[in-house]
Length: 455
Image (cartoon, rainbow, N blue to C red; front, side):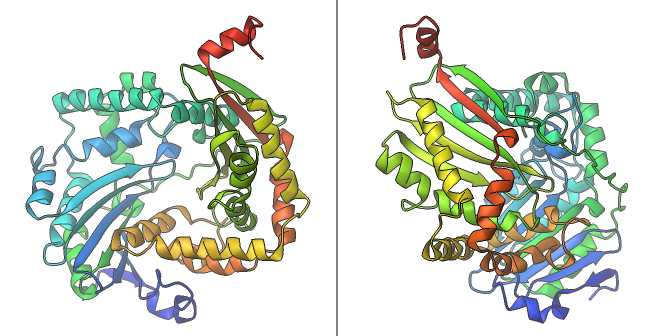
């Protein structure tokens, strides 16, 4: 094995490895240029999932420059100094593989899946486009039209437009204020030079993690990675983002008018970041409220009140404090204010600790089952490992939960959650002053209300 692999820590953690099958046998290495590498051999299927994660999402964008992370994701399929336009997809197709990418608040990630006798093509492509992506003016202009159309389609979606407004209202200073796809006006003003500068700032080994899961030999894989990525310069040290959203000082409410037969409600509360001690009882609360047809929101709003077609609670892990939110799609003829009040009734039950021992144990089993059943394929495992290696970092995260090791401590900490913990977290975060409430109302119906013709 190459001597340029700087560190490797997997074998020393045998006590933790027994807790999660996903992290069992994971090998972590860091090249001399700062590139983090996670490999997990799994011989059950003759496939290899290859991913590269960049710690660069909409969180890293600046005012007036939004949407660059997502736009850059598109540009990485437009060719490099080694691969012509269309060649990346052609190689993938000719080798019977699949590829795609996704961007979110905290990261951008790219993936390939290939049969285990040809996975090396994925690494060669990723090494080339880490620093060799082309920013041809003509290609940039063409792709801008594609991204603009994608953004407009998203704005036509009722949930997308309501979510954008709620996040933009809830966050005043932090970049979670803007959507991942950016604002249309910023996108229209973007130039190829701007995009190249953003790429030069974030797409470097020290800001990236390569993940391999599947049917390969670890030693061979590490040598390939060293050969392909080892000579790339580390890149600039990423400046920390220290923007802290100030505490909300009172309820915020907003109303979106849109032609829609289905009115929608979204209630959002500021909630803590990944690996925060309160994040675990909030995950249990999320499951209690909205996982399955026996969940509280389904039983109350869909079955008993029959006021909505769907009701959910959502809470996702992020680098910085984000939102815990409740969503409901109303049936025609039902009052959105009544649904909002019914949602608060269910929140108040949590605050009172009105939770049975059987119910909380069921929620914990559901979280564990979701993690296990959602991680059967190599790509799903690669996504989990890469995501937490990218977002669970820094002094705010306990050492034993940093990076992919978060997956080990997750179930342990979930198992320790008590009814009192859930009640305390609900009392702390689900307060009136900490919430933002969004209504999406049928435009015509709203006109009738304003003119006194509707109730």
